Image (cartoon, rainbow, N blue to C red):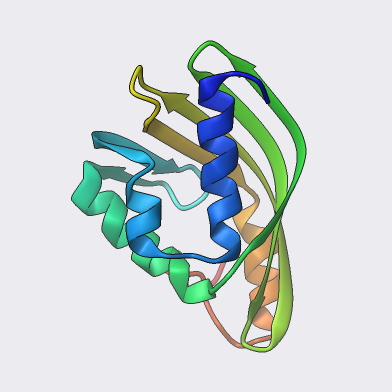
Length: 137
């Protein structure tokens, strides 16, 4: 990663290993947008993203293995596997994230794509549901 947008996204992903809300918020512009394609959820603005991040942090630390990272100007696409422990059970989620980074190096748009059914099937073993998602698919 040699360009500023790719570095910003890489730093954001690395921060998940030791998640701290205030640390995460410094990566985003005030008017940033988060879109979770699988859950059909959109968050507009830093306050909505803060609430979303707090919810995601209930999973604890996440080890992210980046399979591919491609950047073109201010757009960064990342294919990755997120691994974390939930309810004492390991969970692995294949994700494609698309980020847009503004001129100040902050994420202005963050889109996530993954298979929600796969996540739900893994969570069934823990008798949990996806936060903000349907109870069953």
